[in-house]
Image (tube, rainbow, N blue to C red; front, side, top):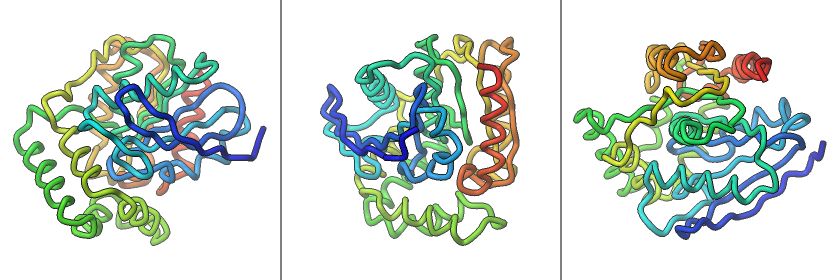
Length: 270
């Protein structure tokens, strides 16, 4: 295993410039953050898996250190992931790990690429473009962010982090939110609720998967993961697990041990 973390940029065909961190050795494990996140959202997992996997983390265009030229969309994020994977010497046995927004991209990609070995879906998301109240809330959040990230920072921490969690978790989430570009964050809010964001064909996802839900998650409640469990693989995939951890919507930061155990349970299928 190499302890060295490489950082570099990948330019996609649409002109997005994506910041990537990569370390470890072995099959590829790609980690994708949620709205307002960065590669730091997965830092606690690195020491657990980098001896067995090449761990590749990246900031979505418009988040963290990544930039975009055209307005982002869920289909575009999926194409960006495809571009990153196509740039690798080998993408066999790839495992996709997605948190919230990242889980949406992971499921879309896996639904069209049967070669994916496994999915880790943390606080998973779904399309809500057909729900007016959600569209109004997300577009309103984007509009508020355009006035300054500080205007949505504290409320975001409150919505993401469980009352029982530590101040260290709140500090990390605060840092991630504070690092966001206002326009990039707003555009991502709009992409999440746009008409271009529709659910994938979950029935075509045949690989092992684990859904990791926080028992105090207000953004992606346990019931959402329960619903997805009946949809992935057409409900007939016996290698789909649901694990509940003690957290809000920042499961990896709030209950690292619980997330690691849930991931190991899925990896046992491989």
